Amino acid sequence: MFARGRRFFAVAVTAVCMVLIGPSTPSGALVSEPLPLPVGAAKDIVPGRVMTWNICNPCGSAQNLGRAADIATYAPQVVGLQEACVRDVEEIRAYLKTFYGLTYRVEYGSVLRNWGRCGGLPWRAGGYGQAILSAAPMTDPVTVEYPDGGSEDRGYLAVTTSVGGRPVRVFNTHLAQRQQESFREKQVAVFAKAVARHERTIVLGDFNAVPDAPELAPMWSLATDADPRCRPTADADCGTTTDWYSKFDYIFLRGFDARTHAVHASAYSDHHQFRADLEPVRQP
Image (cartoon, rainbow, N blue to C red; front, top):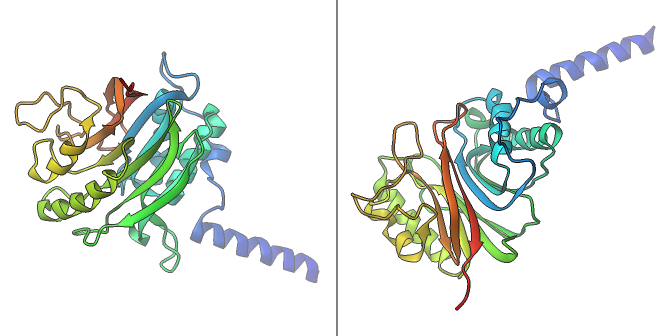
């Protein structure tokens, strides 16, 4: 009788803990059905394909199955995620592997631990910031928090991986909010200096600024966008990447050319997926 009582107590405590802190593995992966992919979806990881995507927060972890399906549809080799909670990214990775057979490594660039953003108990809040998914190994990860993020902590994550058979430094950043130009100007000054140290770079991110915004000038002096029509002029033909018809999301390139690029609206974020198929610049 005593042993049975102990077992009942243990089960009860476990149930309470599951309610409070959630399961240790993504619960959806155990009970959910995969969402079907559209006709023409990628069958496997596409070498040389990169994507940047602000996955929206707070939009709820219930979106993660759909986010995984959207990523699997195009199966980039490298994905830069912004507004990313560690718990959400882990769940997305689990769905990608379990349901779509896509295995990604991950590096996190969390700059904030916030219970309101990412859940968890108040003293065990989830990490929030950037994440990079890569099919190829990543080395030398560096997370930098900007000296002043504006209304919320912001920063960048950088890793080294291989794209198109060449080693490349990949950056992923999220700059201060739309109305905070002065903060973005200071952040770009820090960020551009880091990017300039590398001749071959892929820069992914939500810059929260349109192409001709003055604070983006240092980036344009270093790199070109994967959309060849997009330039830092008011009359440039830049495709929009948000639900409010602005281009805020960029794939800046140094030492790479974009063979193709595309923007895809998503039901699971207020930002669109921006992807490009890259190849290293051929030396003369």
